[in-house]
Length: 398
Image (cartoon, rainbow, N blue to C red; front, side, top):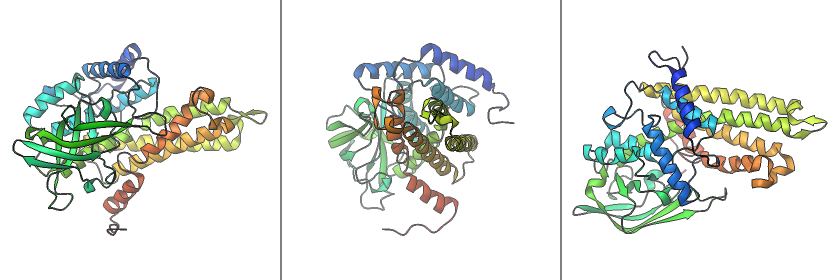
């Protein structure tokens, strides 16, 4: 039995329905690799409507409780098929961190919070952003300095967040802040559902080496956040964030569906690039490299499928997410780098002047982000060593 042969679930029929929906409805926007922000207000409006339609069709949020729009008889393979079909068509993904925030609200939110926010996420009335990382607290998230101090029926929030994708367009933010500075750093953090229109919040887009502004920095100056915005218990934010990050990193593993598409594009490029009296695809050294990439893509795909399968049965092992994340991030970088190198001198160009309109340059520049986001490669390697292999923990201050 294969991953997509689960009894009671007709994978072929579901794939057909997803494919037909995307081919008939996906907006005609230029494809850009990775998790990117809209380049204009008009594009943001298009993506909001698109997100609403994808949820309404039942292809996102199918794993939610039925009372909030989830699908009866949901099967974990549905998510993998949806990801595959989005990648196949190069359809734009709906913007924001709504899926991650919904997971957190379903697991830890109050009945009132779920009733207030989950329908708005499905209708795309709220675009969410993730407000975790700080200038001195990225992979070491517990070192955050943003504070939320209780003042009557509010928390007063001060501090700064950075690397927050889509924050410029966000209506809501999933915020982590320090609510008790007197205890161990992991123990004094809380989570909030933050209204991004509150006075005292300033969002500044950051221009990246890709030439676009997908990340943002967000500043908080005496922002009065209602106490009922607290998600879960006071000072329980580390447990909540850990659960969220596990879900996010598992989702990163699902991105391996794009690896096969990139490999196909790389093979096509090799067939077009001149090499000697023929093409690069006829060069035995290039063919050997392509064969190696093909094997690694197959391994990464199987690893991701196995991790998602175990996650659906609540049987995830300590090594599952780090291995899936590392295999994707490293392979994604290697394929993109090989694509740029295969172009030769044309690899120094970009956009319309470059081969494939700069696709490989954009892939390579964004590939570095995947080695950092969701936990850097170094953090994933530490998790693998300490939690999976049982090696001694890294000394403090090393």
